[in-house]
Amino acid sequence: QKEVEQDPGPLSVPEGAIVSLNCTYSNSAFQYFMWYRQYSRKGPELLMYTYSSGNKEDGRFTAQVDKSSKYISLFIRDSQPSDSATYLCAMTGFQKLVFGTGTRLLVSP
Amino acid sequence: ETGVTQTPRHLVMGMTNKKSLKCEQHLGHNAMYWYKQSAKKPLELMFVYSLEERVENNSVPSRFSPECPNSSHLFLHLHTLQPEDSALYLCASSQDTRENQPQHFGDGTRLSIL
Image (tube, rainbow over all chains, first blue to last red):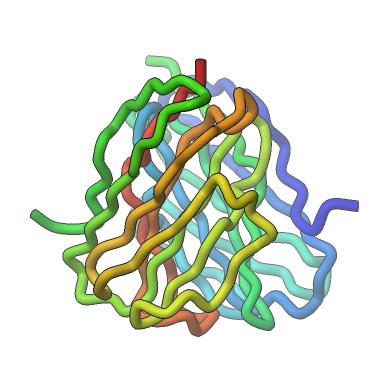
């Protein structure tokens, strides 16, 4: 079993839709959770950073962590074509940083 | 310049060539990392440096040789590479190696081995 599972997609949505991106994990030691956005031919860009369970909001983006279910989500409201990218979840615990494989998101005008 | 800068952006080399990848960070961070990103795989951590000292080496073949002359610069020296080494090589930095410090990435070097 992989430590972090993430659906590779692609996930195709129309402009304005609410997008939900998810990761599940198996290691209960993970405490810090991140979402990175990676555009084509670019490096990953840190989008959201959360600690422990709960929600964190930043503009159109909301990161949610449910440690009891070992499940994290990234919600994008009013999605835009410029949100089209690959979204990577990442998490750390006990000096270990593990990434998901990334979900490719396509937002059509 | 700000952030993490990697050069070259693209590199094509034969299996017998020797080349180097360069990374420079302008964030005042003390830790730097090399990752390999292949299609449909999670990022693979290769090397970790903290204050110019290598603190982690994840069973990387010796044909990859890192160098960290100071806390702002990181190199990856390549020699006798194999076709399966073709990938995007990413450099990252963080304030230090504590797990609560998020990493910031460069745009990578796309490496193709002929």
